[in-house]
Length: 309
Image (cartoon, rainbow, N blue to C red; front, side, top):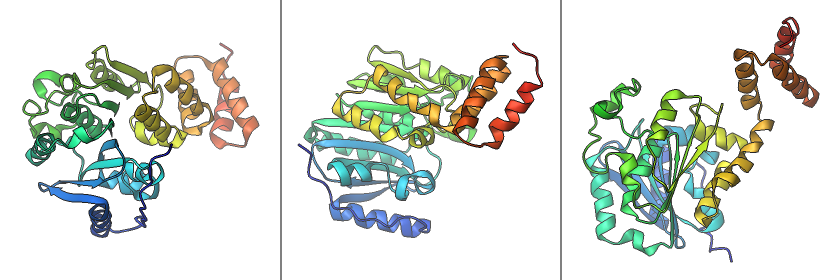
C-alpha cells in the first residue's frame, strides 16, 4: 500500500537565491520545520511516513540541476509520502560545521531517528562524504554515497591535491573519518567512476563487508547528474529504501547508459585512446543509424582514415 502523499506545491524555478530559500523555508515550516545551521548551512524537514530520506546538497547545485529546482527528497515526499530531512549548504561544502554537529547531537538525544522504520542517507561529492559521516547518527540506515571522499585530512589523504580551500576544516573531530562512521549502517553503496583515479582511491577506503561498490566507468565526476540523465537515480534511491538495491540490480539499471550520447561519446574517445579503433567504428556507425550526430560522423571519418586494428 502506498504511503500517504504530502501536498507540496512548489514553483522554485528561475527564482533568485533569497526568494528560493524563502520558498523552501515556507514549505518546510508548513510540513515540518526549517532551521539555519551556522552561517553557511540550513536544514529543512518534511514530515511524512516512517520512511526517511536524508540528503546533503548544495543549494546552487539544486537550483541549477535538480528537477523543478527542488531538494531531491521533495518529489519522494510528494509522490511516495516519505519524510525528508534536507541538509543544504550555501556554497561548496563537506558539511564540517559545529552547528551541524550540534543539530545531529540534538536529533540523537531527542530520538528523532528512532521514529522511522527505514532511513536512507544520500549525497554526492561533498554531500556523499557527509551522508556517510553522519549516518552514524541513525544506526541501521542505508547509505548511498556518489563519488565520496573518505576525508580531506592532509595526513590521511595528502595524495589528493584537490579541494585545497576545504582543507582548513577539521576532518578529525566529530563525525570525521567517513569510512569509520559507516560501521553502524546496514548497507552502504559507494558509486564512483573507476577511471577517475583519485575518486577510485577514496572509494577503496570504504572497505567494510557491508559496503557494495558500484563502479560507473566513463560517467565522470558529476555522477549525480549523469545518473539523473540516465533516468536511474531516483529508481536507485527507491530500491535502497525498499531494501532491494544490490550490485546486480544496479548493473541492470546502468545499461541505460548505452542510449546516452554523453556516455557513448566518452566511450568512443576511450576506445580510440587505447587503440580499439575497430570497436569505435562499430559504435559510431550504430549511433549514426539511430540519428545524425556531428560528433560520431566526424569520428567515423577520422577512424576511416586510420588503419584497421
